[in-house]
Length: 400
Image 1 (cartoon, helix red, strand yellow):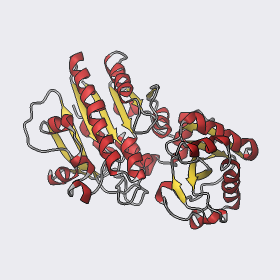
Image 2 (spheres, helix red, strand yellow):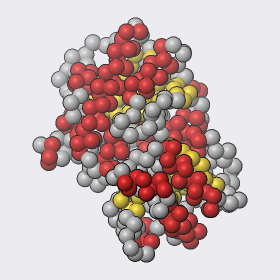
Image 3 (tube, rainbow, N blue to C red):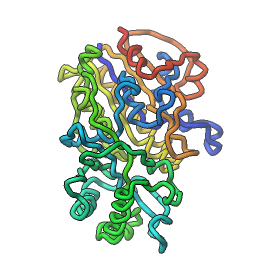
Image 4 (cartoon, rainbow, N blue to C red):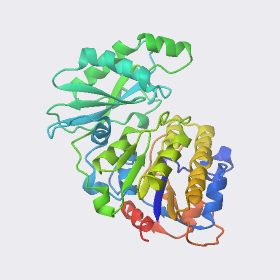
């Protein structure tokens, strides 16, 4: 038996008037999910433990079977693992987003944050911008490391865990009240803005109608993580397929394999087919028992507030990931169990994460079930199944 999780990050949502009162998951054209759902267990799972902030870090730990209340030490340390940062026990890792501020003729604190992803800037361009910042601001206390797209890492030597605001939580707002209270971070953010706003790369981006990547934004502070081995915990050899450093970092910390897929960028136009190929190769050819395909696009489109693009991201997840994966597993002649779910909701209404439970679909290729239930939030709630502790859902996947 082979095991596959397909996770649509932030895919869950709320009913939207312009979609006729349907959620994006209800509204999207999903022929493969429609077919599989009639033969699957459909239920709800609560991935965010009570009292913890809703995020892809805590939620994906849950989906992989790690209780965030036990294993979570911060988001950025997990990403640092993926980047290959040699963290010391005394280091603090922070996410360093390169964001878009409004560039108004006003004091820095009166600028408005426009975009947390700078129009999904490429890693290549953002690396040049981060280098310009690091050349002036890096020292023995602070070191910058390049990640993926707009997502980078700052290591604070002998630092402490501080509370920072997540940039995607305050889009469209004046930044003053959300700036760090620690003066050194506030100062670095303001100086990064001065360094980047007139950088040639940003001048060219503006000409192309793209948002400039003009300020560092720090958040997600945490200490060096210590995850137990996924294989020792589950008895399954696992492979992670994702474009984002957070998921890769969780995999590194858990001793899982990490697939490198060319063209996988965490955006709407990513290499979906390459992700499927990597997962199927791991399962069918390379001796892995379990693969985890993570697709970031629905979450990014939720943060952007684009109903149309979020619906399209879900359609792509269905037709370019789930459909081909199922076909390739069937063609290989292997028995498999498939779990499809979001990690958390990213509702268009709020453009950030919420802690609400999310729907899951669990399909077994060896079972002949006949039902009428579709896969979406409404049907998940109607099914009467709720896995209240998200880290226990994976036990349902592996129960055979």
